[in-house]
Image 1 (cartoon, rainbow, N blue to C red):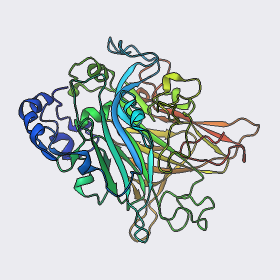
Image 2: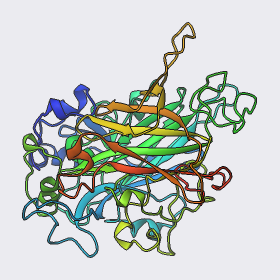
Image 3: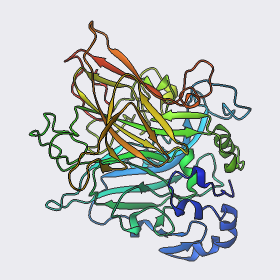
Image 4: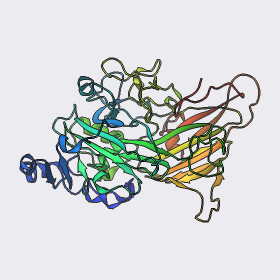
Length: 466
């Protein structure tokens, strides 16, 4: 862990920041920069991170509470039984019923200080899903995301800072970018508030950008999207829900589901939990995940959602201590709260928001149905002259750091009361099956199409409605 080599072929950002920031080790930081940090005051230059560190009073916005409050920490999650990998999986120090060590984020919006402190070592994967409204210059409102660093419970020897880098976000000033060589990093026990004016609708992703090869892979990654100003206008499409400002309803939809793609290289997760140094040039993903789960867990229930807790994020239900409430009957999925099962009525238009923060290209196939690609990397598929450049396909090839916005129309139901089932899967067998001879596991989920009127209106993204 003390030295992260450059691995350009596996760099999910594709920019210089991820490569250049891996040239200094944490041990070098301790030797060279430790004294500088201790004496620097409110703003200090940190050579190992290449960024700045702010005291809480300098970082927190003075004009109100944040719209979303995230905490960075470590934790545990559970992956289904799979092929023999080696002595390092399942992790022999994992607490029951978990088996895989992670880093990640938690949504701690509205929690008391005691509840917030209790979330150390309780990260979730994928990181909390959140969304924003497109910035309206006629009604200018900034969106604020506060990030705190709770530290790593299992690795107190590491005091890595954290950031929130919104991958692909345009027009952001460097101070709020989260790339630490030109921005700020949040040390353990500190806070920083990011301020955004999202001017471009579409699907994005976010991640920590400190020790970024490691932190991205260990799970400090999530999906974020921006709703267009056109939302609420029912003259184009009856639901008033759109992916882009299309002016004609072509990106209108009835239901939406986030599909966040990530990976687990079991040896590196074991190495982090056992105070070892993963050799990143040996990278080999053992598990491919959708929304932090592998099939068949991808179709297991969602955790209960507190729909009134936040208008901008999926707020997973919590107990009085702030602890996540596990999906019904699945305590092993307590920190993997989001299902990937798609439910809809026949004839409805369904939006799928794909984002990939693994280190490999994936080929997601919707068997038996055509998807229309209406956006890519938060860019509407329409030329400057208005030409429609959207297209239909049953497979999207999605590289590291890319996002796709697609819509499909649910076909007529075959009859009866039960759903018709279609498979959404990675057509690379080793990634849809996680090398398991049974064929189960990996980036697979199901589309359940019900008779018209069977599924209630969707209340939030990934809501089954049943």
